[in-house]
Length: 510
Image: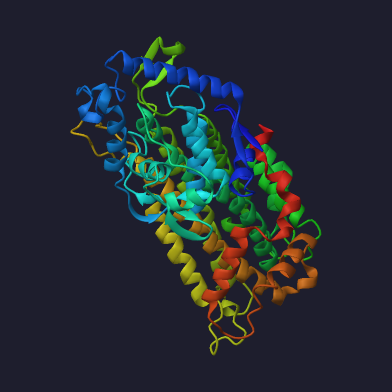
């Protein structure tokens, strides 16, 4: 059981809830904080005080007073009118993360909701009822208003959800789990949607996949080193200590460990003095991506435990303050940075693919073909990788440099952070495709070098991989091979990498 308190949720607990389906609850202390802040809201309503979002309209309507008799209608109208999401839904795992993160934010006790609202959010998590939330429609500044409104529709029994492999009405799913929809009261609709949980949820899922891919990139690059008889001296610890970046040092160490008993890598001067940059600079380039991952992880963990709605209630109601914690700029920057860093993993991987297939750059059969000329071999796989890399360059354009005013210019600067997080996830998916192609080409190349000469770690990877993608003995529809290797990498079934997980935790070494 993971116990939330609004303060200490980390990636370890997040993974347990998202992927291991561990149950969730919240602490008694956080419940007391929630109850205290709720008392403040009820007092404001009873005394007919003018407080934004509780007894007023929203956005440009913040000067319109709402009578006590209409505060519930105000919240319901808010959710219905703001549910303007467009496009395909977020992956179900992202929807699950949104529920968890919104509950955790409300548990800080600054938002004025009733405990039952948080309970119902966590009920949906525990019952694996995940709202269907369209991906498009958020500007990433008054909060992720449109996406989170679709989440709230599920809470009030008016939305669609993913449940037991089907898309059904939320009321249907809740009834089967003996749950009941909630009726929103004063401030609760606003508190639920005025936050950054769409971009943050998409961000944490993207980050977790990115971290896994960065580790896999090191292993696949090590196989390419063997396939091209790379010069191992470039990974000598002294080189990397001389520069001083921990992440670079760690990547070099990991590759040395992976290749420690390889008979295929060479020493400088044996075949050549030095390699091209795509081999020689693996620690520098991959290490720089790890630096960005550290930055992104830090910002996401702060936001996972942040109060991001408006207004916020402090000092037991002595201060009810309107501010802008819903503005997604910190996460927008982090997502744009993640996009660039992950796109670079694909860029350097594609250059290694070119070195594997180009007969002008190696002594292997042209395009790794079993019958050059009659059979094209891996020729078009490199094209596909180049296409993904090019697409990433477009997606990597920073979303955060854009802003379009909204709400009659009241909300005149926005972050576009949700667009950034979505594009980051698309880039990560593309990176996995490029790495899958490098893996296929690298495995084929070592067939010619001699599998028995591979390092123990890379040979284990080879054996596992050959269970899902055979060697290229004849041209076939390679799209199927790429797809199955992509799925293998995403599911993380390649056990070879696990012994090196400890070396990956660079960010905890700080």
